[in-house]
Length: 229
Image 1 (tube, helix red, strand yellow):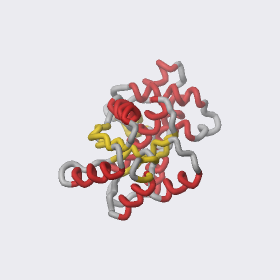
Image 2: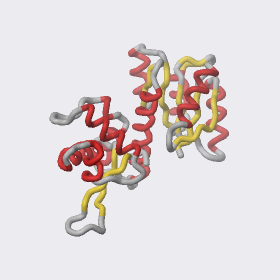
Image 3: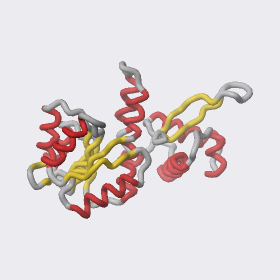
Image 4: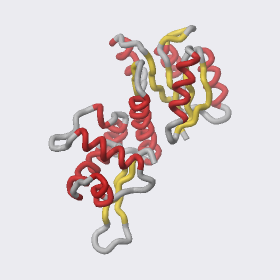
């Protein structure tokens, strides 16, 4: 579970973000902080028990700016990940967010679908990070960076349809087990070859895992699992 602190001064908004998180697999809401000071206190307290993994951080807080809080955390060597959730669109703030290592930037207002997409991408990054040895290969590093982008963040490669890609991702996300290309092709009315192309793309961008399935005659068949499971 990814232990998450919501840092937001508006009570209704903070409660909404916490409820959104509770609807996602793999996340645990450990608390809500209404100020930068309260966030720092929560991080200090968690360090001696169970560290907080992620902040959902508003930029405009009563006692300071979210960017300044992020800088203080980095200066103190606190390795917590940060997703900015804010109405601020100023490009200088966006640039500063990148420079202090904020991994996602979500602009208010947004739908639950957008929230889920960003947090699913972050969870995919964490899953790849935890599955990687102490020294990563270039391919593994590329996969970690790619996993922070949702499939909608960039157009699919030539020959792949965005609508079909969304359908494949949605079916894979809902599956309770890994699927082969054939198992995914039938319910979506796709050919096995077409289904494999989309699954390979999702594996290449870090949204699905890919591994051999043994126990069948002949060459092992590949199976794919959404990275969030």
